[in-house]
Length: 318
Length: 96
Ligand SMILES: Cc1ncc(C[n+]2csc(CCOP(=O)(O)OP(=O)(O)O)c2C)c(N)n1
Ligand code: SF4
Ligand code: SF4
Ligand code: SF4
Ligand SMILES: [Mg+2]
Picture (spheres, rainbow over the protein chains, first blue to last red):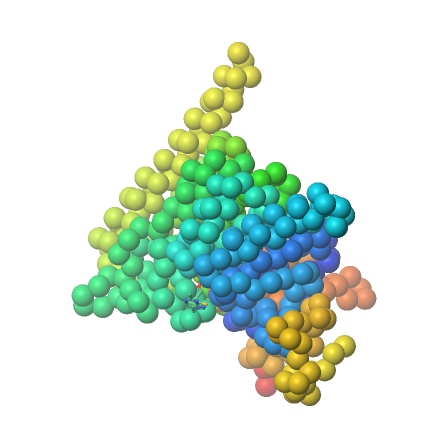
């Protein structure tokens, strides 16, 4: 437990913008991520939510867990609807139809809804530079329909459409690097987060809201149901994803990379994987391969961050 | 508070499935999903609120003495609060 997270009540608002009575599975990391994100966002917001677990478990007619204006979209058009709302509000403010209340536009979707199906609309919205925050709740598969693989599913993970067995070792491709794709759109703010690090997550959400223009945050959301881990281990599994370097926490502000938390030594990936059924079939040789690649990717990321730091320093010294 | 899902008929639903009462999911009891419940030894409690921040239901509140305690109307019994509490205040007990 990090020391700074002691005495939570003094540090964060008690106000919950996300009502209990939602129907997420027991121990759902995605529900926790949404709850924390919306503590940081507050009430002056319009939420655009793609289909997926979050949409389903928060909006069982006639009930809603949302205490803020919320609209449900298809998979494909979340960022397009967000763009439309943002542009319409701008026009109405310009014409004096409504007052400028500095209302934030926040689009949310799962990894399937973001990194596969909604990517085209998201790319367009980022490129056009709409002033909005997009949060991807990444539980590494299409969970709501029963654990189908997405392009965010990690290499080797068994899902119902990448089942481990005689002729398959599970997911065959390396996780798509969506934050890098967002960075390539030259947007002002990109970050990764995980509810196991709640203050970091909330700080990043606040930053993403405040920047002018598009912001993209990818939140690793542990899914006990889809990952096959014990419900009470949700937080620990998220923490290990970060500490093994499998899901590093970092920010990219105006193209400058910065590690949020860096560890002197990474924990072996087996500490993370052994807690989850989706990786249980992996043989030592395969695990060794994955371990190598995780370290490689982590070093790459650290180099980017170090290069940015170096550049900043030389600018200051010049 | 509006009608519960059992009392409501389709005729009373808003056009477009609009829900006009913010956060009315709080009427819905998720506590009966629980197979184990958190129990507390508050003598060891630091009132740090870590159990509160990590609860996916957001159902941990401060009681009259300032101790953090689950609202059993919603608590699904995941055991996260028990696992994350730094001083082992919370023990999960099987529901009868
Ligand atoms: C175009 C389209 N294809 C398929 C579906 C069915 N569907 C609904 S939710 C879902 C899974 C969503 O996965 P993800 O976006 O990762 O969110 P998660 O449920 O994992 O949070 C699918 C496939 C749909 N609603 N629309
Ligand atoms: S399937 Fe996973 S992400 Fe969806 S509600 Fe259950 S635990 Fe949460
Ligand atoms: S985490 Fe434990 S010590 Fe902290 S407030 Fe909760 S019960 Fe008390
Ligand atoms: S057992 Fe789970 S749902 Fe119940 S109070 Fe603890 S963290 Fe919340
Ligand atoms: Mg998903």
